[in-house]
Length: 214
Image (tube, rainbow, N blue to C red):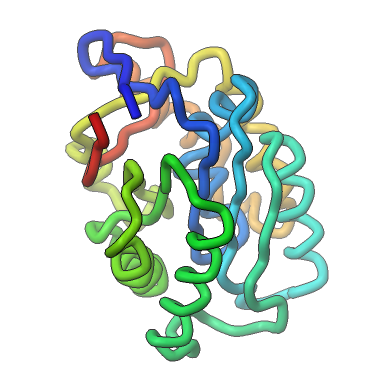
């Protein structure tokens, strides 16, 4: 898949099938909502995979549905009953991811970074890397939980210009009403603005590019 770059700004222009993995509802909207909205608007088939719902399962499931709808993506929740990722056996999680990758055959996979300090996020990263061992696709990783991952200011080997999709990203985050007091919409905007200043855009998201098919 070819990549189009301007300075430090990068966008997967030919990703027709995109699968994004998040440990919990709201992780993808916070960490990768702008990129996913941009790709969906361009016509890519975007699937947001949420592994687990740790609490308030009915409410947070509906919030996840609305968040994915706002982005323009399909939602897949693997474990709807309350649990944490660490409660799931790793081999079972890898098998579930294997099945998803085999069915959807993505051009681009987006997943938590191994630098994410949230334990569940790190487990999802390991399972995704394992599940992609035989799949030729691009792989980008992101940071969620901005308060925990304060090192986000130095994170990223590439940046995505999300200026045109900043409001969509914030609207998707706002769907998670049960979590808003902890999420901070202003901080999401401020972080995107700061990453934009680094990369030459008004608003941007930072990613690590782990694998690129040229």
